[in-house]
Length: 145
Image 1 (cartoon, helix red, strand yellow):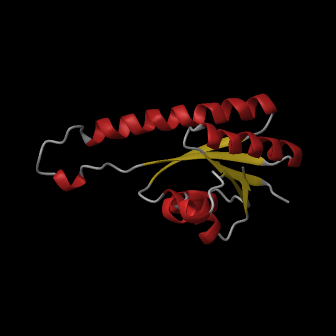
Image 2 (cartoon, rainbow, N blue to C red; image 1 turned 120 degrees about the horizontal axis):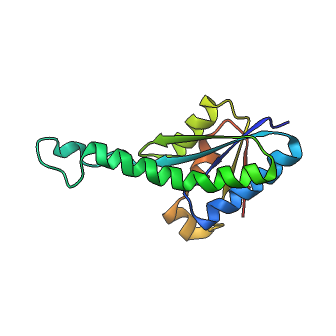
């Protein structure tokens, strides 16, 4: 039985579909939810000797605001459904690795994600973080379309 479910969000309508599915699943199973989002690391490191467009501190503050905005609807929807929720923010170049790491760090026994449902050549060329999580995770993944 799933006791703690990780649900990553990028703030998109598609990822919110997975959030609502994860909340419903957690409510029915009496599970705890971990909402998480991934931010990109500071992109101007290679310009350390130059004046960047945005300082490291400014960038970090902006990323934290964006992460909070992505996670606020997760907290609100979970609270409305009576589901206990924790949130996490990870900074990473590779979102799928951050998702798997967060699930492991938080002791999650399941991950719920959404998928565009691409097939064929478009799936091969575009790839997907969901597909990468499915391929590399040892934790069960439920994909919603």
